[in-house]
Amino acid sequence: MSSGRAGDDRTSRGTQWELRLDQRRPLPEVIEEKLRELIDGGALAAGERLPNEPELARRMGVARSSVRTALQRLEVLRVVEVRRGLGWFVRRKPADHLPGDFMEWISERRFRIGERLEVRMALEGMAVSLAAARATEGEIDDIAKLSKDHLAAPPDVDELIRTDEAFHDAIFRASRNELLLATYRMLIPELEEWRRRSYVGRGVAARSGTEHDNVVNFLKRGDSAGARAAMMTHLLGLYHEIQAADDHDGGQRPAQLTTFVGIEDEPEWHPR
Image (tube, rainbow, N blue to C red):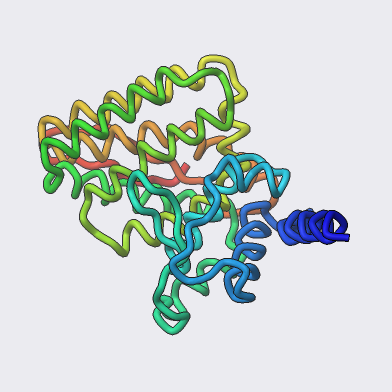
């Protein structure tokens, strides 16, 4: 009898991680909903350490990158927190400590993919400019290391996305602007599908790593305008791909970004 109960317990623990998949919704959003359900229902208590990312991915039957994106969304909403070297934990603060309607509104709206990337480019341009002015030498060294990690990553899409996210996230943290970081993390999940496609092309990963290094060189010199131009150049490939799809679907009027930087110039948008 006890063996049967143990088997039932294992089955129950397994089924509690099952996802209600919906092709109309991004997978990270479905994972986020499941984790919120487990937290709100008490299966994951305040202060409890979550299974690590590979284990969560195994239990849910999804890619680790989707789990990471869902956790980042929950971190922005102050539902979970990451502790360096220890992992992800359910926050001890109650639900009324969540941000206000602004973040919820961004999360729930279905903005065009091109609109999201244009906002991301604006955020990244500001973040890297601030990082050039504010980052410590140690922070820039960490960003440089993350750039090398991305360049040395194996030809695996999940690993390429993980190392790319780590690089960009470190720049936002070095900007010392929490609202920039929070807004950026709300946008990233909606761009994952396009980012995965971008790494399929031959030579894309190597070019991405080289462009990361170019951004790092401007950060080391404390050159805000140069860092911003280098970041815009880095993001243009994905932007052009997304813009073409938006144009096909009757999206916004096409625009072209110039990234030439002279003594007083900065990247500018022009009609195309």
